[in-house]
Length: 221
Image 1 (cartoon, rainbow, N blue to C red):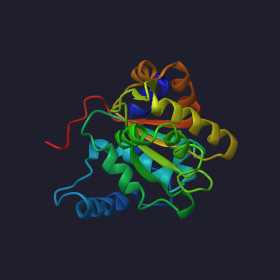
Image 2: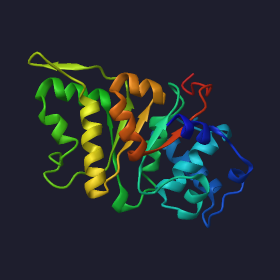
Image 3: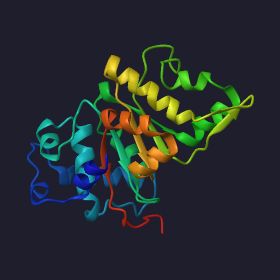
């Protein structure tokens, strides 16, 4: 994942001319309008973030030509990584508006998953991995802010809830080709520290890593 981070942080000349039949500039302008409706009147997608936004647009539009150009695998999910306040959650919520019906997803804060685990215990792990959320096949989920939750205890037993969910989501990705999306402030090495080598290894197969520059400004200020 570290090598992929370096690749995604680069902004080679080829990204400035996108090989696609879509107009990415027009899509960004439309997303800004939706962002002003959803968030605040001054919402803006900054040009410095375009390399990240282009990859997300290409993925969620299922634009194979652009994804090949950006090195994005359409069979995997997305891990959107970056510093606090860079706009990860807002962007993923906006991507729902351009995602085709069969690839629709919903955003679930990891913190909320933790609260549900405290209340309902281990069935929450099954709820977000094995399909009990809808009493049907598992759905595509974006787990927001991975790393903000803590290890939790249920009747005295400690559990790394999100680690277990990620491992289970990997299993349904392998068996049913259902992707998982994640946003996180953590680097690849920090993910390993929080969740273990096995989770980091599974994430390599489960997601495309798309990352902001570590010096990206906090847009909430």
